[in-house]
Image 1 (cartoon, one colour):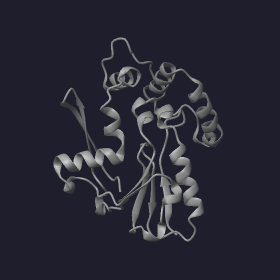
Image 2 (cartoon, one colour):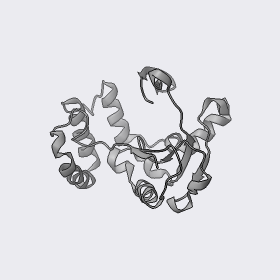
Image 3 (cartoon, rainbow, N blue to C red):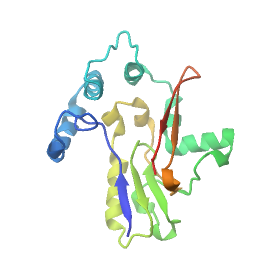
Length: 211
């Protein structure tokens, strides 16, 4: 069996974290409890401080990160959940631009018990539609599916809106989707992210070696 899980949820032990990596296993569950108890605004401010080393100006935001922090607190545009739901977003993009511009959607499941590992096309990737950064990579059929089902069940129960304070994720019915596993070649995958405000591209982020 070849299966591995990739993913992360924002915490003070992440990039540029406040604690030494050796304390992560101890501090992460404590941070999760504290995070869920914090008021939304306090969580957003603390997360900005963690990442940037300074408090955000939420009254007069000027940087990209400050504007995102404000949107987390105030933007409730009903169109956003459709764009962050990985299944719905795929369907919308395929209908508008054509299926050749998206990774194929091989299967969807409402819960982990529905997954038929014997019928999946390998190699493939299983991910929840309501999370960001969590992927289960399967290179071949697993010898035992029980452990993988438990992982998928935990992912489906994860409340990403509390981890990231992004309201839109709370409006999504959790499901699982399956995509083909793609290789990036000798230089890895190149990921282009276009950030837009009011319909205009604000910046482009290029990330290399994603494969």
